[in-house]
Image (cartoon, rainbow, N blue to C red; front, side, top):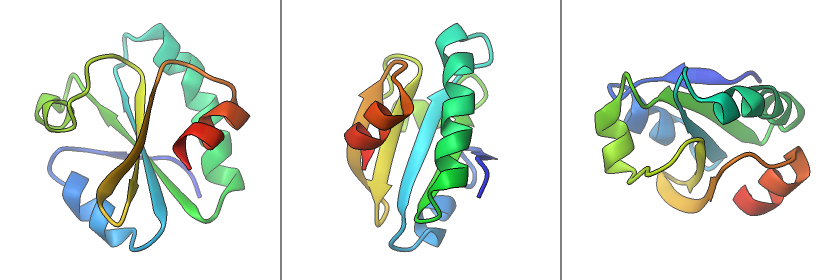
Length: 103
């Protein structure tokens, strides 16, 4: 599965639609250098882990979603189980470290 870009308008719907799969949401911005470094790592995670759903949401275009999730720095990845926040990681990390911290 590939990474899907979501918006504030479908954020809750996407979390619910994932069912019992773990969802990772990457809160990012186009101007953020570390966010750009992280993008290919998240693509790999999405492609290699069929039991995960990976979404990205642009915080500049969707500030309400970032505020609701209490995002204070970029990039921040939040994992959700059954629509409820499970774990949170900020900054760039290697793939194995991200998985260990989010799953």
